[in-house]
Image 1: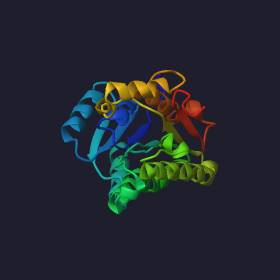
Image 2: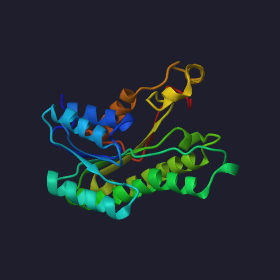
Image 3: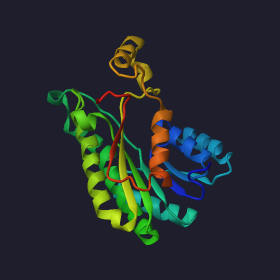
Image 4: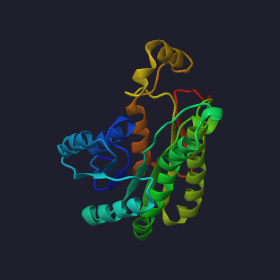
Length: 248
């Protein structure tokens, strides 16, 4: 069952990690995919080739979602190339962790720009075609720390909490036009980034989670697929925690 057959999807930050897996799962479900990357050119080209083998149309764009004009140009280019924009997955994000007393203004601003302002930029950019179509699904990648906070991540937590508020307000504004907006709040997801933590620290995290394991990129990609597809046609304005019960 191809849940995204004939739909055009934009995924920001898809050259690795969670975004990469979302793109792979979406391609398996028939989506035509436009994805962005900032610097990982080789990984982007490899992904383009891999996803195209599923028979869907795929194109990678080197674009900075934290730049308002670049986001608008991306949406225009995708619309011209693909003919529609049905789904937006705002996945681009970074961390620059540190205690508040030692955090620089630059580290705070860059995390807010890439994590939060990119969501505003890209959502604004796709609104016109979605309003014209009178349909669309926007999925924003948040985090459990945007719900509960986390020491050493004031910038990251603030950016993700802002995404949740933005999501709910956008859903209220656009619901009458059949445009849905939801957030996913991943918990401890095991990716190449967590490999650097060390086995002891990873096991400590696992043991603190009710399901006694870290999440996988598949766990996040599958929920993203649900929210992007028509299976979730009556779901909007929600923050869905995908955290193995961490917030229970």
